[in-house]
Image (tube, rainbow, N blue to C red; front, side, top):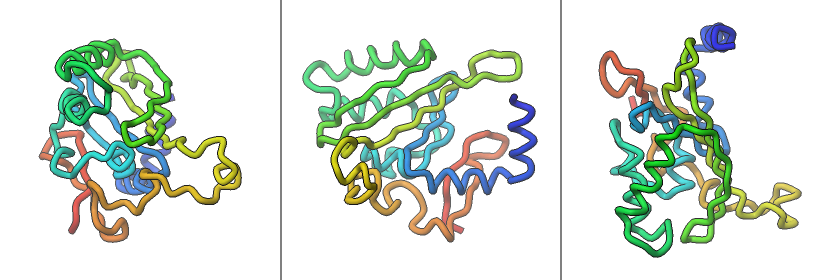
Length: 182
């Protein structure tokens, strides 16, 4: 399967795939085995209201959990305990799917799957964040009226214009990518 994906990827090109991911109506993130973010799209930042100053190369899942805990996203409790509990779960690298209601009322469907290398070893995780706040409402069934935070124009932590954005490695000889202006 991985070789087939690689072959299709070569036909399209990495830059094209990365650019296409920016157009997805869902947030997407990829973390490595050390829980360091390797990729995220703008919708990910918007769904979770992460500022550009936080979403920099090298950001750790622990940093984002702490940011959320300190702003009350996980409810009452000790923020450091909330961070430790979530990191403990993340280190298990098990598939998951759940709904989470954010402090601002946004409801996210969060789906995560471990990623494996050619030998079947877990090398990271891919997670998708879908805003389902209006799911079940009449407007949602017709596709009209969806104006939640994840569907705003993408400006939070990516390039001001997707048409002028360029994808660059975060550092030489790494596999991390970021969206950058020319």
